[in-house]
Image (cartoon, rainbow, N blue to C red; front, side):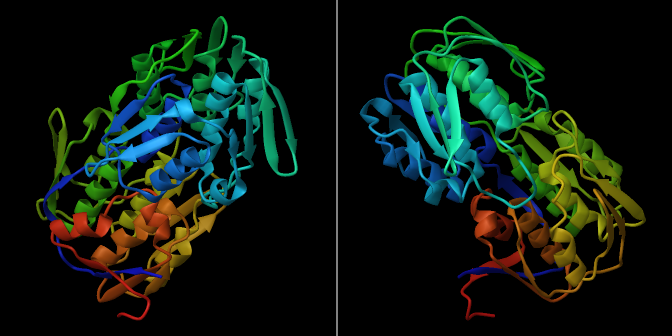
Length: 422
């Protein structure tokens, strides 16, 4: 098993390109199953979750091909199975997203209850209630969700809580439903908008994506399309935080600044100087000492929960005391114990963490517990004295494309090593 080894103390300098968004590409890939002809998806990041999604779709009979530049072609016309088995679903919670397309396009689905990162309860009941409102017959038995429908029928669906994957599942299902579907209290994330834009390019009739009310006029069929995935705002934010922590100057290219307002505002509060263009963001600390910032996570356009761990790592070495409040997932402070091993002064009470900045962190062996926690540990390693060795880095490969190569290109002393190397 490989690990990531980091020797801290180098200010990051240079330019880094941003990959396609993990949280957009997964629903777009499975959304291609709604078409009656092939789709070609470009700007696809090379991630473990993408590989898992392709394997899942291939097992169901879709024909997939991939170019050297990660352009994926999906032909759903050979679909023969409509089951997502546990051995794949357990590794990636986003597998639940096949449910809506399968029921809408093929009239049936059997999907194992999902797994994924252990960051708290993320129940699928809103997905199931939404499908039932559209007329699907849904049962949960023996650890599987089984759904059937002759043809779905449009309905008014009010989501009890804001859920990104729940909104995406119902949105995809509604595209082929008879009549009008209105999704209220819908998630407004850019990744939901990207999925809607993809479906529109297939022929779907969707209005209101990016607001809390999405209206879908069902159509009889969708056609394959060519589509490029939007840039990953969380990867962008992670590299910007890494630059701020190390006191460097970095430009993120192929980025989408408008999707990062909440993150950029907080980085400005730390003392960072930020400039933006149409598709780039540059951060420069100009020798300034980091100031701590309070954050409270919230659905978009609020501060993203997927950036909480990275900001906690930054606050650990910033001047002052900060308060981090997590409102999305109740078990997303598992990185705290590992940051403490590096010398961070963090106290947790319920869904709140109080961080007192310390002058320095010290390298140590640590262990990643989930995707975004793993990123925060890499960032901490970039500023820790001595060597930090991060275990269980398969978590980071689920959401960050060649992170050690991109950071090395900015001057970081980081590499992937085998279990016997030091």
